[in-house]
Length: 355
Ligand SMILES: [Fe+2]
Ligand SMILES: [Fe+2]
Image (tube, rainbow, N blue to C red; front, top):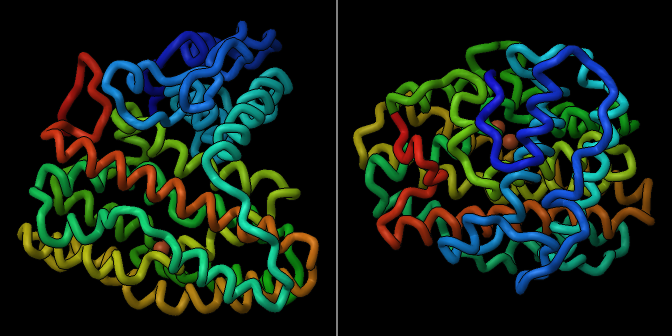
C-alpha cells in the first residue's frame, strides 16, 4: 500500500519522517490534535471540510489520517516505509498524543452507558442495539441506491473489510478460558476456517471485483473521509491496548449483532443492480454467519468475560456504543451526501470519482 496524500501539516510532517530510515523526531508542532481552540461541536479543532460544506464534524481529517497510518504500521505497513518504524519511540510518542485526541473525540460523541451487573450484559447489549435509531443505510442500498452509490459504499467499507477481523484478533492473547474460546471461534469463521477462499476479506475482494473496483489492500485510502477511517481506528485503539479489552469485545458484539439483517439487504440491493452471485457472496455469507456470531459474541464471549471481570461491564457497553455511534455517523454521512446529489467520498481537487 502506498502512503496517501497528506491532509494537512501533521500528515505532511509524519509522511516526510516515514519516508526516511527510522530516527528520532520531535513531536510535530501543535496541530489539529493540539490545544488551540474549540468550536461549536466541542472539538478542539474542526475539519476544514466540515466548515466549508457544513457537514457533520468528523474530527480533523489530518489527525484521523495520521492516527490511521500509525496503526497501519502494525498491519500491512506501507511501501517505502521501513518496518522498524512500527516500534520507533518517536512514532509511538506521536501516536499516544493522537490517541488522547481521538479518545476525547469519542468521549464527546458517545455517552457512556450505565454499567450493568455481569449477568445482565448480553441483555444490556441487546437493548443498546435495539435502541439504536440511526438512519438505515442498508434499507437505502437495498431499494434506492444507484450503482455508483453502491460502489462508493463498497469503497468506504474496503478500508476495514480487506483486513476484516484483524483488529479484534489483538484480543485473543489478552483473554483466558471461555471468552477466549468464543473469540477464537468467531475469528476462525472470519478467516475462512482454514480455507483462504472463504476468508471474509477474500469474499469482499470478490465483491469489489464484481463492481469493477480495485481489490488491492488500501487502494482507496486516499478517497475516504475521516468518519470511515474512524471506524477502523477505533478497533485498533481498543485492540492494541489491553486496558481496552472490555471495549474491544463489546465492539465486536455490536458489530456482529447489527450485521445479519443489513447484510441481507445489501445482497438484495446488489442483486437489484445486477450483481452476480460471486459479488453477493460476501453479504450472503454474513446473513448466516453473523446470526450465529451474535449469539456467541453476546453470551459466550461478553457474558463470560463479564462474569470474570465484573468491573469491566461498563467498558463492554461503551465499546458497543462506540461501534453503533460510528456506524450511525457513517450512515448519516453517506445518506446526507447522496441526498444532496454529491459523492460521499472526499471531494479533493484531484479525484472526485471512483475509477
Ligand atoms: Fe465477517
Ligand atoms: Fe461475523
